[in-house]
Amino acid sequence: MALHIVVCVKSTPSSVNVGVDASGQPKTAGIATALNPFDEFAVEEAVRLKERVPGSTATALTVGPDAAADVLREAIARGVDAGAHVSGAEFEGGDSFATSLALSAAIKKLHAEKPVHLVIFGKNTSDVGAGVVGTQTAAWLDWASVSAVKKIDAVDESSATVLRQMEDGVDTVKVTLPACLSTVKEINEPRLPSLKGKMASKKAVFPKWSAADLGLQPAQAGAAGAGTSVVKAALPPVRPAGVKIEGATPAEKAAKLVDILVERKLI
Amino acid sequence: MANILAVIIPSRGTLSPSSYELLGAGQALADALKQPLNAAVIGGNAQALAADVAARGAAKVFVVEHPSLTSFTEELYAKAAAAAAEKAGASRIILPSTVTGRAVAARLAVLLKAGLATDVTELLPDGRVRRGYYGGNLIAEVEFKSPIAVLTVAPMTFPRAEAKGAAAPLESVAFEPGAAKSEFVSFAAEASREIDLGAAEKVVSGGFGLGGPDGFKLVFDLAHALGAAVGASRRAVDSGWIPYRHQVGLTGRTVRPKLYVAVGISGQIQHLAGMSSSSTIVAINSDKDCPLMQMASIAVQGEYSELLPLITSEIKSRKGHAVPA
Image (cartoon, rainbow over all chains, first blue to last red; front, side):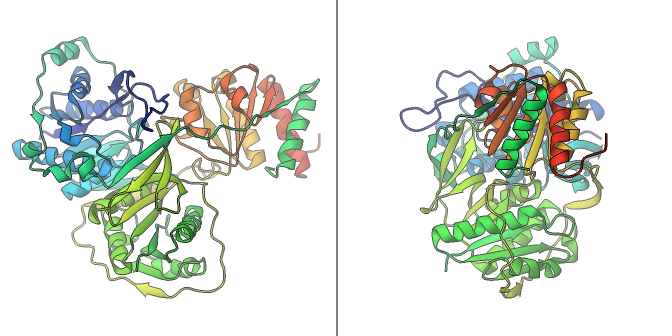
C-alpha cells in the first residue's frame, strides 16, 4: 500500500497589515511573499502521511505567478517530493471559483499520471481567507470532502477516517478516496525545513502548466472565469475613542467598570 | 421571479441561533433587493423543524427530508441544497458561516456555477456585499458576476428573526441521495460548560500577561459570571495554557460579540484580526500603552489577579448571586 498525496499551497503576503492603493485595491506591492501560514500544517500532514505509509509520495501544487514557485520550494524543503505550478497571465484575478477549477484540472492531470488518494488544504489563506477552495476543488472533481479536519485517523488506499472540528464538538467521518481534506491548525505541529530538504528544494524543477495545458478555455481561468470580483477595498471604520477607568483602588475600578457595563446593558 | 433562499442546516437535529440569524440576514437581503425570501430546511427530520422556520418571515419553506440527511455530510447536504435552490428558482442563496454552512456553500457554488462570497457583514442594495479580508485589515466590496450568487453571512452580525405567527406554506422537495462518498460515524460533544466562541454574545479572553495557566481560572470565573465564552491569544495557546479551540485571531477563530473582555492581551495584529469587530471591547492590562488598551472601548489599568476576582464578585452581587462571606 502506498498513497499519493497532493497538498495545495498558496503564496501570500507575509504581512496582512496592508493598505489600499490608488486603484482601490490592496496595496501588496513591496510586501514579501511566503507560504500561507495555514498551508504549513497541510504540508506537514502530507509529509506525516508519507512517513506513516511507506512508499507514499507527496506533490505540492500551486496556482500563482512565477514567484509562487518559491512556495513549492518551501514545501519540498519541508519534505514533499515534487511540485507542480499552474501559472500564466490567464490565471490573474481569479476568485475561489476559478482557482478551484484550475486546481481540480491540475489534480486530474496528476491523477492520470499517478492516482491521487488525498488532496490536503490549509484552513484558509491569510489574504482572501474564505476557507472554501478545498471544498470547491472536491466539488469540481466530484470527490468527497471534509472541512476542519483535526486528525486523519485510519487511512488506506480506499478510505480514510477523519475527525472534523465542529463548533459543538468533534465529528468522525469516513470518506471514500480520493477525497479532499481541509485542515485546521490543531492537526499537527509543523517542523522546520531540514537541511536535506533545503538542498533538495534548490535543485527542484517544477512542471509549469498553462490553462491550455490543463484543458481549460481562457474564459474559465482567472478574472474571466471568476464568479465574483472585488470592486474596491477599504479600510475598516475607525473605532470611537474609548474611556479609561480611573480609581484609587482595584475595588473602585472594578465597581466603575461594572457600572458602565450595566449602563450599556451588557450585564 | 428572482428570489432569495436561506438554507437552514440543523445542528444535531435542532435549529441553532445561527438559523434564526440567517433568516434575519435573509430578510435584510430581501428588503435590500426587493425580492421575496424563501427558506429551505434540510435534514432527517426537516419536516418537524419546518414549522418553526415557517413562522419567522419566509414566504415559502422548502423541505428536503431524507434518512440519508440525518447526520451532516458535505456532498449530500450540498446536493439537497441544490435541489431546493433549483425548485425555488433562487438567484441568491444564503447560508451561515459555520463549518457546515461554509462547506455546503462551497459545493453549492460549483453545482450551480455561482459566484461565492463568504463571511459577509454587509448587504448593499445594488446586490454587492462587503466582507473583511487580509485578517480584517481591509473590507472588500464584492460584486457577483454570475446569474446565481451564493453567500455565507458572518455570525453575530444580523438580528435573529422572531416568530411572527403567520405560517408560510411548506413544500416538499424530492431528494435522491445516490451513492454516498462520506459516511458519518459518530459525534463527541465538547464539555457542556463551554459556550461556543463563534456564536457567543460575550467573550472573555486571556493572554500572555496572565503569566501562566493558573490565570485562566480567574478568566473562566469571570466568563461564568458574565455568561461568556472563553477565548485566548496565540501566545497563551502556544504556551500550552489553554487548548487551541479557544484561540481568537488570524490563526484562530473570528468573533464578533457584543462584549469582548481582553485580559493580559497586548493586542498584536494577529489577535486584533479576530476580535476588532466586537461592539464593546474592554481591556484589562497592567500596560496602559499597549495596542489593546489604546483601541479598547473601556480600558482598565491594573493587575488582573487583583481586578478579576473583584469584577467577578461585583457582577455576581449585582445579579443577586452573592455568596455569603
